[in-house]
Image 1: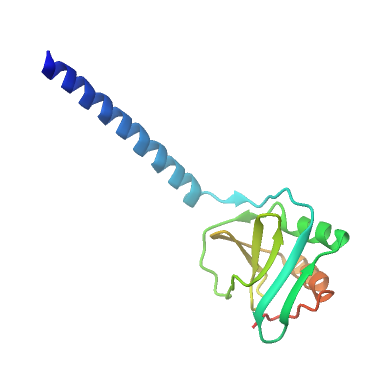
Image 2: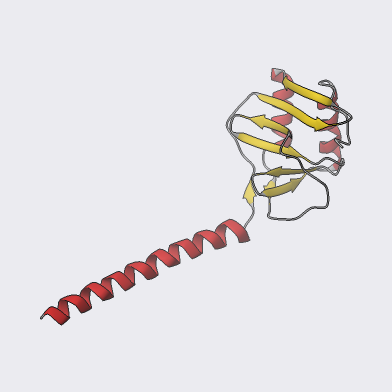
Length: 142
């Protein structure tokens, strides 16, 4: 009788462990194998440039119109795990609420969000530069 109880406990524990491992594996496959869509709720943004020899120190709140324009440029892109050639610094970024977008330092149009990356089209990249030039941001951010 005691062996049957221990056997059932072991079997139950093993099943729970397999289910848990399967859930973790599925999450990791989803997170790393599939792209995610860039989305955030915040309406107003800021630009922060802190370690650029060309720009000096820039910390500015974007105007409502510029926030909306930049937001529209960023939202909807698919972000992927990648290792792009352009450099990034965690001190050169756009921020909308908790969403932080590291700017590619060499004018490549690639943006890092979390540990994933997406690339703006040439027109989108030029539009972003035009907006940020109003705040004295000059590329490359080296």
